[in-house]
Length: 449
Image (tube, rainbow, N blue to C red; front, side):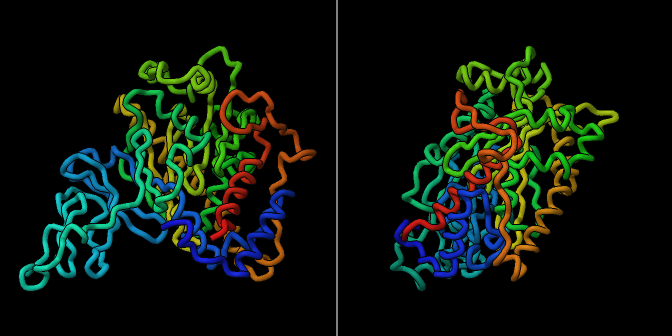
Protein backbone atom coordinates (compact mmCIF):
# COMPACT_ATOMS: atom_id res chain seq x y z
CA UNK A 1 0.00 0.00 0.00
CA UNK A 2 1.63 3.23 -1.11
CA UNK A 3 0.90 6.86 -0.43
CA UNK A 4 -0.64 7.26 -3.89
CA UNK A 5 -3.12 4.40 -3.36
CA UNK A 6 -5.10 6.09 -0.59
CA UNK A 7 -8.79 6.58 -1.19
CA UNK A 8 -9.79 10.26 -1.27
CA UNK A 9 -11.54 11.67 1.78
CA UNK A 10 -15.23 12.30 1.45
CA UNK A 11 -16.24 15.97 1.83
CA UNK A 12 -18.09 15.09 5.03
CA UNK A 13 -15.12 13.36 6.71
CA UNK A 14 -12.72 16.04 5.54
CA UNK A 15 -14.92 18.74 7.07
CA UNK A 16 -15.10 16.91 10.42
CA UNK A 17 -11.35 16.39 10.57
CA UNK A 18 -10.47 19.93 9.50
CA UNK A 19 -12.80 21.35 12.15
CA UNK A 20 -11.14 19.07 14.71
CA UNK A 21 -7.68 20.19 13.57
CA UNK A 22 -8.59 23.86 13.91
CA UNK A 23 -10.13 23.47 17.37
CA UNK A 24 -7.31 21.28 18.73
CA UNK A 25 -4.92 24.23 18.95
CA UNK A 26 -7.38 25.77 21.43
CA UNK A 27 -7.42 22.51 23.40
CA UNK A 28 -10.78 21.37 22.02
CA UNK A 29 -11.46 17.89 20.64
CA UNK A 30 -14.53 16.78 18.72
CA UNK A 31 -16.79 14.06 20.04
CA UNK A 32 -18.02 13.28 16.53
CA UNK A 33 -14.69 11.62 15.68
CA UNK A 34 -15.14 8.96 18.37
CA UNK A 35 -17.97 6.92 16.86
CA UNK A 36 -18.25 7.32 13.10
CA UNK A 37 -18.24 4.49 10.56
CA UNK A 38 -16.79 6.51 7.69
CA UNK A 39 -13.98 7.83 9.89
CA UNK A 40 -13.28 4.27 11.09
CA UNK A 41 -12.89 2.99 7.53
CA UNK A 42 -10.56 5.89 6.76
CA UNK A 43 -8.46 5.06 9.84
CA UNK A 44 -8.00 1.46 8.69
CA UNK A 45 -6.39 2.74 5.50
CA UNK A 46 -4.61 5.92 6.56
CA UNK A 47 -3.53 5.02 10.11
CA UNK A 48 -3.28 1.25 10.53
CA UNK A 49 -2.38 0.65 6.90
CA UNK A 50 0.59 3.01 7.13
CA UNK A 51 1.88 2.84 10.70
CA UNK A 52 4.05 0.20 12.39
CA UNK A 53 1.83 -2.33 14.17
CA UNK A 54 2.90 -4.70 16.95
CA UNK A 55 1.96 -8.33 16.33
CA UNK A 56 3.91 -10.67 18.61
CA UNK A 57 6.94 -11.21 20.81
CA UNK A 58 9.72 -13.62 19.89
CA UNK A 59 9.21 -15.51 23.15
CA UNK A 60 5.73 -16.53 21.96
CA UNK A 61 7.27 -18.55 19.11
CA UNK A 62 10.53 -19.77 20.65
CA UNK A 63 10.99 -22.92 18.56
CA UNK A 64 11.26 -23.67 14.86
CA UNK A 65 7.82 -24.13 13.24
CA UNK A 66 5.98 -22.24 16.03
CA UNK A 67 3.37 -19.73 14.91
CA UNK A 68 0.65 -17.40 16.18
CA UNK A 69 -2.23 -15.72 14.36
CA UNK A 70 -2.57 -11.93 14.74
CA UNK A 71 -4.45 -8.98 13.18
CA UNK A 72 -3.83 -5.52 11.76
CA UNK A 73 -7.13 -3.74 11.22
CA UNK A 74 -9.34 -6.14 9.26
CA UNK A 75 -6.43 -8.29 8.03
CA UNK A 76 -5.16 -11.47 9.67
CA UNK A 77 -1.50 -12.50 9.57
CA UNK A 78 0.50 -15.60 10.45
CA UNK A 79 3.61 -14.82 12.52
CA UNK A 80 5.76 -17.90 11.99
CA UNK A 81 9.22 -19.02 13.00
CA UNK A 82 10.15 -21.08 9.96
CA UNK A 83 11.95 -24.39 9.81
CA UNK A 84 15.09 -22.32 9.23
CA UNK A 85 14.55 -20.38 12.48
CA UNK A 86 13.67 -17.11 10.74
CA UNK A 87 10.58 -15.14 11.72
CA UNK A 88 8.20 -14.19 8.91
CA UNK A 89 4.82 -12.52 8.76
CA UNK A 90 2.39 -13.66 6.05
CA UNK A 91 -1.19 -12.77 5.19
CA UNK A 92 -3.54 -15.60 6.17
CA UNK A 93 -5.13 -15.73 2.71
CA UNK A 94 -4.72 -18.50 0.16
CA UNK A 95 -3.76 -16.98 -3.23
CA UNK A 96 -5.92 -19.52 -5.04
CA UNK A 97 -9.43 -18.42 -3.97
CA UNK A 98 -8.83 -16.26 -0.91
CA UNK A 99 -9.75 -18.68 1.88
CA UNK A 100 -8.03 -18.60 5.27
CA UNK A 101 -5.42 -21.32 5.57
CA UNK A 102 -4.59 -21.21 9.28
CA UNK A 103 -7.24 -22.89 11.44
CA UNK A 104 -5.65 -22.51 14.89
CA UNK A 105 -4.59 -19.33 16.64
CA UNK A 106 -1.27 -20.82 17.74
CA UNK A 107 0.63 -23.99 17.23
CA UNK A 108 3.60 -25.65 15.57
CA UNK A 109 3.61 -26.68 11.92
CA UNK A 110 6.11 -26.92 9.11
CA UNK A 111 3.34 -26.45 6.53
CA UNK A 112 -0.07 -24.82 6.14
CA UNK A 113 -2.77 -26.33 3.92
CA UNK A 114 -5.80 -24.49 2.60
CA UNK A 115 -8.96 -26.48 3.49
CA UNK A 116 -10.74 -25.40 0.28
CA UNK A 117 -8.64 -26.92 -2.50
CA UNK A 118 -5.65 -28.24 -0.61
CA UNK A 119 -2.96 -25.86 -1.76
CA UNK A 120 -0.07 -26.40 0.66
CA UNK A 121 2.56 -23.91 1.76
CA UNK A 122 5.79 -24.23 3.73
CA UNK A 123 5.95 -22.03 6.81
CA UNK A 124 8.20 -19.64 4.90
CA UNK A 125 5.27 -19.01 2.53
CA UNK A 126 6.44 -21.08 -0.46
CA UNK A 127 3.75 -22.96 -2.39
CA UNK A 128 4.85 -26.59 -2.45
CA UNK A 129 1.69 -28.59 -3.05
CA UNK A 130 -1.26 -28.40 -5.45
CA UNK A 131 -3.53 -31.48 -5.68
CA UNK A 132 -3.72 -33.11 -9.14
CA UNK A 133 -0.93 -30.79 -10.26
CA UNK A 134 -0.33 -32.42 -13.65
CA UNK A 135 -4.00 -32.34 -14.62
CA UNK A 136 -4.95 -29.00 -13.07
CA UNK A 137 -1.88 -26.74 -12.93
CA UNK A 138 1.02 -28.33 -14.82
CA UNK A 139 1.92 -24.93 -16.30
CA UNK A 140 1.80 -23.04 -13.00
CA UNK A 141 4.93 -21.30 -11.70
CA UNK A 142 4.64 -22.09 -8.01
CA UNK A 143 7.25 -19.47 -7.12
CA UNK A 144 4.79 -16.75 -8.08
CA UNK A 145 1.93 -18.06 -5.94
CA UNK A 146 3.28 -18.29 -2.41
CA UNK A 147 1.68 -16.61 0.60
CA UNK A 148 1.78 -12.83 0.60
CA UNK A 149 4.56 -11.58 2.86
CA UNK A 150 4.03 -8.47 4.99
CA UNK A 151 5.71 -5.56 3.17
CA UNK A 152 7.84 -4.55 6.18
CA UNK A 153 8.87 -6.35 9.35
CA UNK A 154 11.34 -5.30 12.05
CA UNK A 155 12.15 -6.75 15.46
CA UNK A 156 12.89 -4.39 18.36
CA UNK A 157 14.16 -6.05 21.56
CA UNK A 158 12.17 -9.17 20.62
CA UNK A 159 8.99 -7.25 19.74
CA UNK A 160 7.80 -8.04 16.21
CA UNK A 161 6.49 -4.99 14.34
CA UNK A 162 4.94 -4.93 10.87
CA UNK A 163 4.16 -2.08 8.50
CA UNK A 164 1.90 -2.52 5.48
CA UNK A 165 3.31 0.53 3.67
CA UNK A 166 6.53 -0.18 1.79
CA UNK A 167 7.35 3.54 1.70
CA UNK A 168 6.97 4.20 5.45
CA UNK A 169 9.98 5.31 7.52
CA UNK A 170 11.99 2.64 9.31
CA UNK A 171 10.75 1.54 12.73
CA UNK A 172 13.50 3.45 14.54
CA UNK A 173 12.56 6.69 12.78
CA UNK A 174 8.87 6.04 13.38
CA UNK A 175 9.38 5.45 17.10
CA UNK A 176 11.24 8.76 17.36
CA UNK A 177 11.85 9.74 20.99
CA UNK A 178 9.79 6.99 22.57
CA UNK A 179 12.28 4.45 21.21
CA UNK A 180 14.86 5.87 23.64
CA UNK A 181 12.58 5.26 26.61
CA UNK A 182 11.63 1.75 25.45
CA UNK A 183 15.29 0.95 24.89
CA UNK A 184 15.96 2.00 28.50
CA UNK A 185 13.25 -0.35 29.81
CA UNK A 186 14.10 -3.35 27.64
CA UNK A 187 17.88 -3.03 28.06
CA UNK A 188 17.92 -3.22 31.85
CA UNK A 189 18.58 -6.94 31.56
CA UNK A 190 20.74 -8.58 28.89
CA UNK A 191 18.14 -11.25 28.11
CA UNK A 192 15.33 -8.71 27.78
CA UNK A 193 11.72 -9.65 28.45
CA UNK A 194 9.53 -12.67 27.84
CA UNK A 195 5.77 -13.12 27.68
CA UNK A 196 4.13 -14.70 30.72
CA UNK A 197 1.38 -17.02 29.50
CA UNK A 198 -0.84 -16.33 26.51
CA UNK A 199 -2.06 -12.80 25.80
CA UNK A 200 -5.46 -12.06 27.23
CA UNK A 201 -8.20 -11.00 24.83
CA UNK A 202 -11.42 -9.25 25.68
CA UNK A 203 -13.82 -6.81 24.07
CA UNK A 204 -14.68 -3.29 25.23
CA UNK A 205 -17.48 -1.40 23.50
CA UNK A 206 -15.31 1.67 23.02
CA UNK A 207 -13.46 3.54 20.30
CA UNK A 208 -9.72 2.76 20.17
CA UNK A 209 -8.70 6.43 20.38
CA UNK A 210 -10.21 6.78 23.86
CA UNK A 211 -8.00 3.99 25.23
CA UNK A 212 -4.93 5.27 23.39
CA UNK A 213 -5.27 8.82 24.72
CA UNK A 214 -5.84 7.48 28.25
CA UNK A 215 -2.49 5.67 28.27
CA UNK A 216 -0.84 8.50 26.37
CA UNK A 217 -1.08 10.90 29.27
CA UNK A 218 -4.29 10.79 31.32
CA UNK A 219 -2.97 10.56 34.88
CA UNK A 220 -5.69 12.95 36.05
CA UNK A 221 -8.33 10.18 36.14
CA UNK A 222 -6.38 8.33 38.84
CA UNK A 223 -7.57 10.87 41.40
CA UNK A 224 -11.22 9.85 40.98
CA UNK A 225 -11.78 6.72 38.87
CA UNK A 226 -9.12 4.66 40.68
CA UNK A 227 -9.28 6.42 44.04
CA UNK A 228 -10.81 3.50 45.94
CA UNK A 229 -8.23 1.10 44.51
CA UNK A 230 -5.39 3.29 45.69
CA UNK A 231 -6.96 3.85 49.11
CA UNK A 232 -6.84 0.15 49.97
CA UNK A 233 -3.08 0.11 49.36
CA UNK A 234 -2.78 -1.60 45.98
CA UNK A 235 0.09 0.81 45.27
CA UNK A 236 2.50 2.28 47.83
CA UNK A 237 2.76 5.70 46.16
CA UNK A 238 0.03 8.12 47.38
CA UNK A 239 -2.18 9.48 44.60
CA UNK A 240 -1.05 13.08 44.74
CA UNK A 241 2.58 12.09 45.23
CA UNK A 242 2.23 9.94 42.10
CA UNK A 243 1.28 13.07 40.11
CA UNK A 244 4.80 14.40 40.70
CA UNK A 245 6.27 13.44 37.40
CA UNK A 246 6.55 14.31 33.75
CA UNK A 247 4.54 14.06 30.55
CA UNK A 248 6.75 13.72 27.48
CA UNK A 249 5.62 14.36 23.93
CA UNK A 250 8.01 11.93 22.25
CA UNK A 251 7.39 12.78 18.59
CA UNK A 252 5.18 11.24 15.88
CA UNK A 253 2.16 11.14 18.19
CA UNK A 254 3.84 9.05 20.89
CA UNK A 255 3.35 9.96 24.54
CA UNK A 256 5.01 8.70 27.72
CA UNK A 257 4.58 9.63 31.36
CA UNK A 258 6.81 9.03 34.37
CA UNK A 259 6.15 9.30 38.07
CA UNK A 260 9.66 10.04 39.15
CA UNK A 261 11.94 11.11 41.97
CA UNK A 262 15.29 12.11 40.51
CA UNK A 263 16.40 13.35 43.93
CA UNK A 264 15.91 10.01 45.69
CA UNK A 265 18.96 8.89 47.65
CA UNK A 266 18.07 5.25 47.04
CA UNK A 267 17.84 3.81 43.52
CA UNK A 268 14.20 3.12 42.65
CA UNK A 269 14.19 1.23 39.33
CA UNK A 270 10.37 0.97 39.40
CA UNK A 271 10.63 -0.60 42.90
CA UNK A 272 12.15 -3.84 41.68
CA UNK A 273 13.56 -5.70 44.70
CA UNK A 274 17.29 -5.79 45.22
CA UNK A 275 17.66 -9.38 44.00
CA UNK A 276 16.12 -8.39 40.66
CA UNK A 277 18.13 -5.18 40.33
CA UNK A 278 21.24 -7.33 40.71
CA UNK A 279 20.29 -9.08 37.45
CA UNK A 280 20.28 -5.74 35.58
CA UNK A 281 23.27 -4.87 33.42
CA UNK A 282 23.37 -1.11 33.88
CA UNK A 283 26.27 -0.87 31.45
CA UNK A 284 23.66 -1.37 28.71
CA UNK A 285 22.24 2.06 29.46
CA UNK A 286 23.55 5.45 28.52
CA UNK A 287 24.35 7.82 31.36
CA UNK A 288 21.04 9.63 30.88
CA UNK A 289 19.02 6.41 30.64
CA UNK A 290 20.59 5.23 33.90
CA UNK A 291 19.72 8.53 35.56
CA UNK A 292 16.07 8.21 34.54
CA UNK A 293 15.71 4.51 35.35
CA UNK A 294 17.28 5.04 38.78
CA UNK A 295 14.64 7.58 39.74
CA UNK A 296 11.58 6.04 38.07
CA UNK A 297 8.56 4.83 40.02
CA UNK A 298 5.88 4.45 37.32
CA UNK A 299 6.02 4.57 33.54
CA UNK A 300 2.99 4.59 31.23
CA UNK A 301 2.83 5.39 27.54
CA UNK A 302 1.22 4.97 24.14
CA UNK A 303 3.04 4.23 20.91
CA UNK A 304 0.93 5.86 18.24
CA UNK A 305 -1.52 4.76 17.19
CA UNK A 306 -2.74 1.97 19.48
CA UNK A 307 0.06 0.24 21.44
CA UNK A 308 0.14 1.01 25.16
CA UNK A 309 2.38 -0.11 28.01
CA UNK A 310 2.65 0.29 31.76
CA UNK A 311 5.34 -0.53 34.35
CA UNK A 312 4.57 -0.06 38.03
CA UNK A 313 4.41 -1.92 41.37
CA UNK A 314 0.97 -3.18 42.48
CA UNK A 315 -0.37 -5.65 45.01
CA UNK A 316 -3.03 -8.32 44.39
CA UNK A 317 -3.86 -8.35 48.12
CA UNK A 318 -2.61 -5.29 50.04
CA UNK A 319 -3.32 -6.87 53.45
CA UNK A 320 -0.92 -9.76 52.91
CA UNK A 321 1.21 -9.17 49.79
CA UNK A 322 3.53 -6.20 49.15
CA UNK A 323 3.38 -4.48 45.72
CA UNK A 324 5.26 -6.29 42.96
CA UNK A 325 6.48 -4.62 39.74
CA UNK A 326 4.60 -5.66 36.61
CA UNK A 327 4.74 -4.85 32.92
CA UNK A 328 1.66 -4.86 30.70
CA UNK A 329 1.83 -4.34 26.94
CA UNK A 330 -1.44 -4.05 25.07
CA UNK A 331 -2.91 -3.35 21.63
CA UNK A 332 -6.29 -1.64 21.25
CA UNK A 333 -7.37 -3.62 18.17
CA UNK A 334 -10.25 -1.78 16.43
CA UNK A 335 -13.10 -4.12 15.56
CA UNK A 336 -15.38 -1.32 14.43
CA UNK A 337 -16.17 2.30 15.13
CA UNK A 338 -17.42 1.48 18.62
CA UNK A 339 -15.56 -1.67 19.67
CA UNK A 340 -12.02 -2.72 20.48
CA UNK A 341 -10.57 -6.13 21.13
CA UNK A 342 -7.93 -5.69 23.80
CA UNK A 343 -4.82 -7.82 23.35
CA UNK A 344 -3.04 -7.77 26.69
CA UNK A 345 0.43 -9.26 27.20
CA UNK A 346 2.04 -9.54 30.64
CA UNK A 347 5.82 -9.64 30.47
CA UNK A 348 8.78 -9.83 32.81
CA UNK A 349 12.54 -9.84 32.52
CA UNK A 350 13.59 -13.29 31.37
CA UNK A 351 16.46 -13.77 33.82
CA UNK A 352 14.35 -13.51 36.97
CA UNK A 353 13.19 -16.32 39.22
CA UNK A 354 10.05 -18.27 38.43
CA UNK A 355 8.78 -17.27 41.85
CA UNK A 356 9.10 -13.57 41.02
CA UNK A 357 7.47 -14.07 37.62
CA UNK A 358 4.51 -15.77 39.28
CA UNK A 359 4.22 -12.92 41.78
CA UNK A 360 4.37 -10.31 39.01
CA UNK A 361 1.81 -12.21 36.94
CA UNK A 362 -0.56 -12.46 39.90
CA UNK A 363 -0.24 -8.73 40.58
CA UNK A 364 -0.88 -7.99 36.89
CA UNK A 365 -3.89 -10.30 36.60
CA UNK A 366 -5.61 -8.85 39.66
CA UNK A 367 -5.18 -5.23 38.56
CA UNK A 368 -4.80 -5.04 34.77
CA UNK A 369 -6.18 -8.45 33.81
CA UNK A 370 -9.52 -9.12 32.18
CA UNK A 371 -11.27 -8.81 35.56
CA UNK A 372 -8.67 -6.57 37.18
CA UNK A 373 -9.64 -3.64 39.38
CA UNK A 374 -8.09 -0.99 37.13
CA UNK A 375 -9.34 -2.65 33.95
CA UNK A 376 -12.94 -2.74 35.10
CA UNK A 377 -12.78 0.88 36.24
CA UNK A 378 -11.52 2.12 32.87
CA UNK A 379 -14.03 0.29 30.71
CA UNK A 380 -17.05 2.01 32.24
CA UNK A 381 -16.32 5.62 31.15
CA UNK A 382 -14.75 4.51 27.86
CA UNK A 383 -17.96 2.72 26.87
CA UNK A 384 -20.16 5.61 27.95
CA UNK A 385 -18.07 8.09 25.93
CA UNK A 386 -18.43 5.93 22.83
CA UNK A 387 -22.17 5.49 23.36
CA UNK A 388 -22.65 9.24 23.84
CA UNK A 389 -20.58 10.00 20.73
CA UNK A 390 -23.16 8.10 18.68
CA UNK A 391 -25.92 10.56 19.58
CA UNK A 392 -26.93 12.69 16.62
CA UNK A 393 -26.97 15.88 18.67
CA UNK A 394 -23.75 15.14 20.58
CA UNK A 395 -21.92 14.09 17.42
CA UNK A 396 -22.56 17.48 15.83
CA UNK A 397 -22.44 19.78 18.82
CA UNK A 398 -20.23 18.44 21.63
CA UNK A 399 -16.80 19.92 22.15
CA UNK A 400 -14.53 18.10 24.61
CA UNK A 401 -11.97 19.86 26.80
CA UNK A 402 -8.28 19.03 26.37
CA UNK A 403 -6.94 22.31 27.78
CA UNK A 404 -5.23 21.11 30.95
CA UNK A 405 -1.63 22.30 30.98
CA UNK A 406 -2.06 24.96 28.32
CA UNK A 407 -0.84 28.46 29.15
CA UNK A 408 -2.84 29.85 32.06
CA UNK A 409 -4.56 26.52 32.74
CA UNK A 410 -3.38 24.74 35.88
CA UNK A 411 0.08 24.37 37.42
CA UNK A 412 1.91 22.37 34.75
CA UNK A 413 4.69 24.07 32.81
CA UNK A 414 7.13 23.02 30.12
CA UNK A 415 10.48 21.82 31.44
CA UNK A 416 12.88 23.96 29.44
CA UNK A 417 16.01 22.04 30.47
CA UNK A 418 14.57 18.52 30.02
CA UNK A 419 17.70 16.32 29.55
CA UNK A 420 15.98 13.42 27.78
CA UNK A 421 14.26 13.07 24.36
CA UNK A 422 10.99 14.87 23.66
CA UNK A 423 9.19 17.87 25.10
CA UNK A 424 8.36 17.50 28.80
CA UNK A 425 5.90 19.11 31.20
CA UNK A 426 5.76 18.98 35.01
CA UNK A 427 3.74 17.95 36.98
CA UNK A 428 1.34 15.45 35.45
CA UNK A 429 -1.71 17.71 35.66
CA UNK A 430 -1.50 18.13 31.91
CA UNK A 431 -3.07 16.97 28.63
CA UNK A 432 -0.38 17.90 26.14
CA UNK A 433 0.34 14.26 25.35
CA UNK A 434 -3.25 13.76 24.23
CA UNK A 435 -3.11 16.87 22.07
CA UNK A 436 0.18 15.62 20.62
CA UNK A 437 -1.47 12.28 19.78
CA UNK A 438 -4.43 13.89 18.05
CA UNK A 439 -2.21 16.35 16.21
CA UNK A 440 -0.39 13.41 14.59
CA UNK A 441 -3.66 11.58 14.00
CA UNK A 442 -5.16 14.53 12.12
CA UNK A 443 -1.97 15.10 10.15
CA UNK A 444 -2.06 11.52 8.84
CA UNK A 445 -5.81 11.43 8.31
CA UNK A 446 -5.71 14.68 6.29
CA UNK A 447 -2.57 13.83 4.30
CA UNK A 448 -2.88 14.60 0.61
CA UNK A 449 -3.42 11.58 -1.61
